[in-house]
Length: 248
Image 1 (cartoon, rainbow, N blue to C red):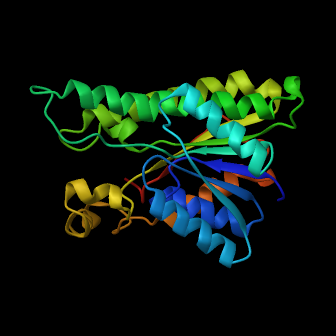
Image 2: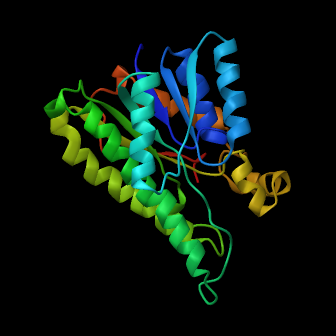
């Protein structure tokens, strides 16, 4: 697979696992990060040491001008984008609807929803057949909270992921004539540092028995599904929402 894949928010967790697996599969990987420069650089070094191709790119994902500059930089350093994984996302803290943090709500929607839209716009412009592209694939990283409502005091995050689901369904229909497939994965409780806000490993250990599978999932398990959705094996799959939640 000699093509360029952009992974947003790729410095850690699910994004980093996707980048690693994609590089092993032959993708040239653009490792996007917002503020985590050191983890992104370390990931690029790791991929290169294993024989893969990767470059790190910084951009504020909620700023359309910055996202446009990001994809222009990818064009110059790796080549034309052939696939996109919209992984960048934040929880935005914990607070009750009775005492909301308006600034946090706006930031969550800007990163999780607007950022996904802006990155999709730039990737689709490069993939669209009507613009000289060869088609491509986009995978949005949503969350199972889009249908469960989320953990206590995190309904703002759940709402943002519900919007990502709606974007996935609508964009799949809009972009199908351009040869672009759009799908989403909806992870459940996954062992990543996003759960530090909940108590980290103690939270994961306590929540595990509540999951039908009896344990949290891993970033690598999510990444494996993402890589399948990017591959030609999923060539007739678009507009699908895949739960990766251990039966939750």
